[in-house]
Structure formats: C-alpha cells, structure tokens
Amino acid sequence: GQPAASAHSTRNDLRLPPTGTELRRRFGNRDIVVKVLPKGFEYEHQRYRSLSAIACEVTGTRWNGLLFFGLAERRNA
Image (cartoon, rainbow, N blue to C red; front, side, top):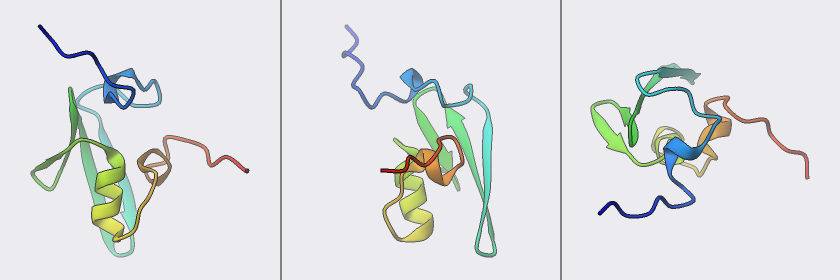
C-alpha cells in the first residue's frame, strides 16, 4: 500500500502550480529555475523534497520556499 501523505506533501498545497510548471526567480546575478515534479522539485538536475530546501541551497540561509518563489504572501505577525 501507499504510505499516508504527510502534512508536508507537496501536492496537497493548493498554492503550488501544476506538475511540469517552471518557477523562476532572479537572485543576485543568477536566474533560479525550478521545475515542479509530481513529488518534489528539480533544480540544476537535482531533486528536492521542498522549495524551502532549494531556497536554502541558493541563498545559504533558511527561507520559506513559498515566499522565496513568490507563491505565498508574507504574513505580518
């Protein structure tokens, strides 16, 4: 059987675009291009479980991946 989807399952997040979509963002002098996969994401021929992991890889600091790629609004606390 299939394991139950976790709360972090990428496909359950309605803010994410459909599989196959390319997310683009300029960071410094680099163009960041991420492809949405059925389970996870691809960046520079590597698979990642989350956008946050890619944002961390790119910036060297922890980011909310949805915020980094402009898919979520920053909430004011």
